[in-house]
Image 1 (spheres, rainbow, N blue to C red):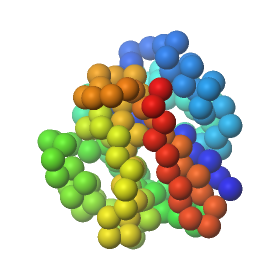
Image 2: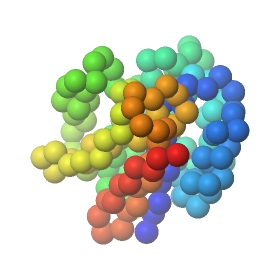
Image 3: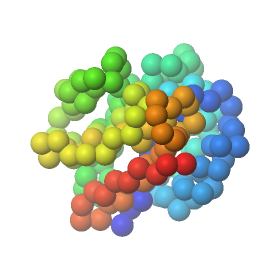
Length: 159
């Protein structure tokens, strides 16, 4: 089994105690981490890169983040293809917009809306971990864990 830590919308200018707690309490046993954008600082990626890390840029990221990371990425893990993207525009219709960015994927990991989402649509898992440390729309901050064996199992974790 492969275990992946999923995080998005950290909106941090420097590593915070909240981020350290997330890493130590939830990501210490993952094989890799996906960050779905709006890091705001390269320092966040450098800290998370203690594990193999995949990052995409978000709309609030600084130019140094945008210069370093792609707008979207496809990552293959244990025979499954994951589309990783931040997203853009209104939360309404975001999944329709990001779906058009990927072909032949099993799951799309995204951020932007600050709203957790974990559901399948037409055979594709749509997974948004919510905002880890940024402004939350409702409820608590959250992250995600994806476990891969014979299938993909995704979980939202309120923190």
